[in-house]
Image: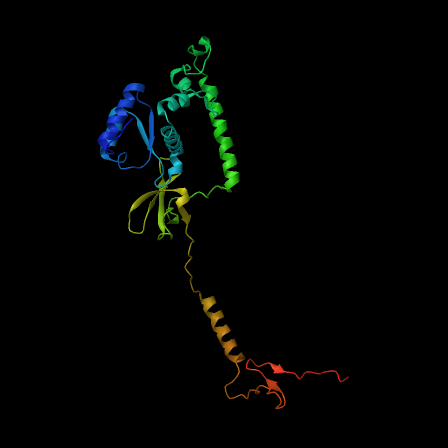
Length: 271
């Protein structure tokens, strides 16, 4: 599917073509590109009655399924015959589900250049519950090994009103403290308000809790204790007119280096 222009109108026309062939889905997931965050696309989602969910801003991992599909599409386009490679991809069973994309979409295997029995091409829908259960187990297993390899840990939960610092991946320093407003409707996204009053949506990994600065208050007891300490320190000081012992100077026969070390004469054996 060619997309000569990346405007909102061109993207909507291509999506309408997909909907005309496969039907309107319940939910559409995308990134936060200008084509998907415009008022025209919101009206399109309202007109076709589907839920539009966007990933966290500046966090491509939140839309990892699409990012991986783009990588697969690039590999297919590098082949000598991209259409043959696309047919092989659609007819190859996936390890996470056990079925090929064609079986999950059309309920039957497609005929390829590989010789197969005719009865294996008959329509046979896979068990939907088993496919979803196996796919969920594979995702949990992959997440476990990924977190163990990279030392991932769960970040503390931020509450509304907490002070946080914000920093994106391409930024070098943390921004001024912002205030947490609420959790967003999208997963792992939090709405914050900056010191200038701007409302932003950030992923949890881009936020860091700011240290709480407690104001110091002076009580009468603290003032009395401070005065007592100051009077004690004055009594313990040495008067100015008190004679101070002068440092001992080395004997004239000794040689002193520039750093102040006394040179001792070498004692040699008289044989």
